[in-house]
Length: 96
Image (cartoon, rainbow, N blue to C red; front, side, top):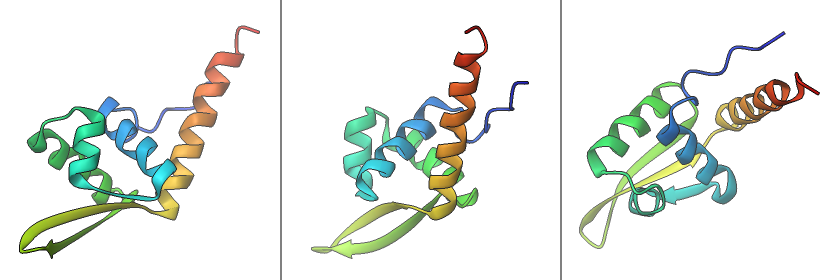
């Protein structure tokens, strides 16, 4: 009856990152850090896990001589998020 929740998205910070990217499609690392209130180190680790899962694409480049990291949601990431939300909705419907 209950679907297993995606362990990648079940982390609060990773879920926050994907939720942000669902709305904006892509965002700079600093924007994500500010919106999630995460430390740069922790966010970096979680972004790497999302990248390894194929949920986001990470683009590293230089902007005005400074390193700039941009994160983009992938099709797989959108599908995983939608599936995760659906599973949560199913959990909420059980008692009704």
